[in-house]
Image (cartoon, rainbow, N blue to C red; front, side):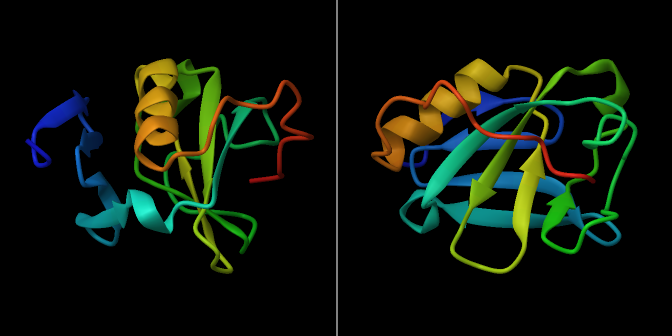
Length: 121
């Protein structure tokens, strides 16, 4: 059942094979991320300078925030390292569930206690 949905909210869907991020590309394109391409996942607490008010896009060319009109109401974001210059910046409705699915399928192991400082976004 590799294609079964393990998590879904309005913008993010985790299946047994990949993560689908709706609204990642302009105007409404979906990004498909295979778990095998994920090197790490970093959890950050958002504040004014680290993406809380960024609905879509970036102010920092190292990160790309997928479309999420409800991001200002959220507190936690996940940053995925795919081994490329730009890292996806995701704000799922349930970050704990998404992080657990990613860690399981990408075989990343438990999260580190300190994810370091949040990036300017």
